Length: 203
Ligand code: 5GP
Image 1 (cartoon, rainbow, N blue to C red):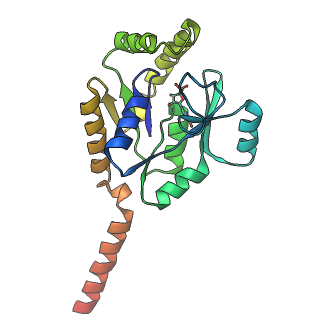
Image 2: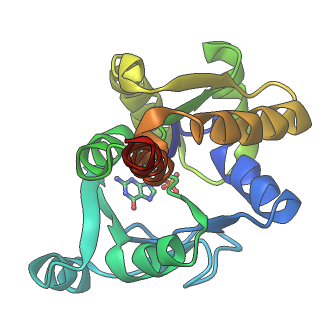
Image 3: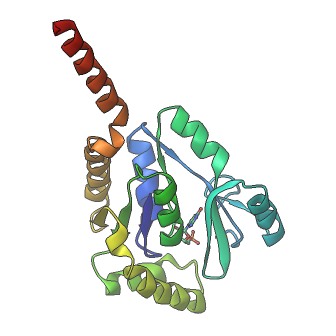
């Protein structure tokens, strides 16, 4: 999971990860917020109204969902399960409440928090993007203050200063995380069995 303040550059990072390595698949979320200019339905998000979103909640169609700055955002189950079964590392670009819910369901998931080098730089990027009104920017900056209190729950903090360096660092962290015992269950079980069998042969 990749979280981070609005304006931290998560979207660009994720696009670059997907085009640089073929081991990743991106989960496309559903949201009730309006599309930004250039966003396409089914690519950046599945855009829905509240009624459609709430229907999918009732049908148990989400791995998690959360409310962020007055809109619903949720991770549809089907695609994630399909891609995990295909052996992909599935990227969820989601905010903190959702990330913590997914971590509970999938303890082997990895939580990365992306941040710009400073708060001033964050504001500069949000203003520079030119896609949100002053009011929305103010809400998102206020939300960043709240989110900053949750950073300790993440496995790693990644500072997005230089894009290429940041993409390479995330890929390294993902690969290193694969070696943690929590993600090597199948290997550990196999080698235990093999050792037992070897021990029995010796008797
Ligand atoms: P934005 O409106 O800027 O695209 O996204 C706002 C926030 O919602 C971001 O922090 C983004 O990571 C988060 N978000 C996007 N999709 C999901 C989702 O499916 N679930 C949750 N919990 N958060 C999401």
